[in-house]
Image (cartoon, rainbow, N blue to C red; front, side, top):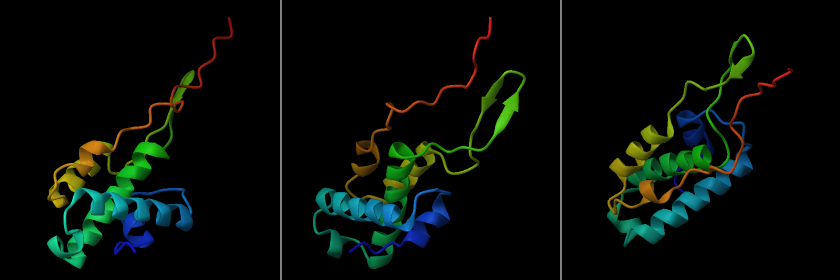
Length: 123
């Protein structure tokens, strides 16, 4: 069972995922950490495990489910970005807390989702 909580993850990133989805990402984070770090439960204190799990779960969410967004528009285009921790910032946080040094780089950004503009050429 992960030591980090849904509230811990929500304290790091703003997400529209429900609590069950965040719990699933926390379980994934714990599993990956246990696989990467020998003697995970003895090498890291409970507090260190919690820190690693919350940032790793946030990284999983940012790279697979959501892209940070707020709204910004201009003439015939609209862009949206959220003022939250970026993927690279999350990677740094995970890397600092990971004695194996492998978890942050193992998470790959999902590039299959559409993230373009809504511009339509009406000519």
